[in-house]
Structure formats: C-alpha cells, structure tokens
Amino acid sequence: MSDLPGPILEAVEALKASRHEVETWGGGLFWLVDGRSMTDGELLALAIRLGLMNPTTTKLQ
Image 1 (spheres, rainbow, N blue to C red):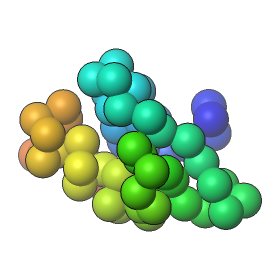
Image 2: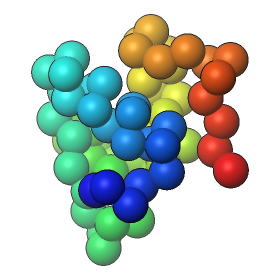
Image 3: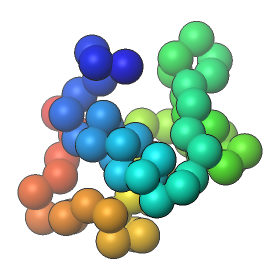
C-alpha cells in the first residue's frame, strides 16, 4: 500500500481509523469500503464527505 498516491493512502488510513473496513480488490484497481466497491476517486470523496480529510488540499494528479 505504500506505493499509493499520498491522498489515497491518507484517505485509506483515515477511513480505517474511523473503523471502516477498507481493502483492495480487482487486482488493486478497486476498493471495498464496508463491502461497497469504489474507485480511488470515490474512496477519496467518501473520506472528504465524512469530514476525515480537507477538500481544499486534496487532489488526485
């Protein structure tokens, strides 16, 4: 997981710290968050919506 872009790794760690189940699937192309399939962007958006990350400093390259 250490080769993930900074904001994605931060979102994964924030979600896990908030007691969400987060794991990769589909060869690492997708995420399962509490049993729901997500892309990197969706995972990041969820963390922002939940107030776990600041939306003004978080961008995917």
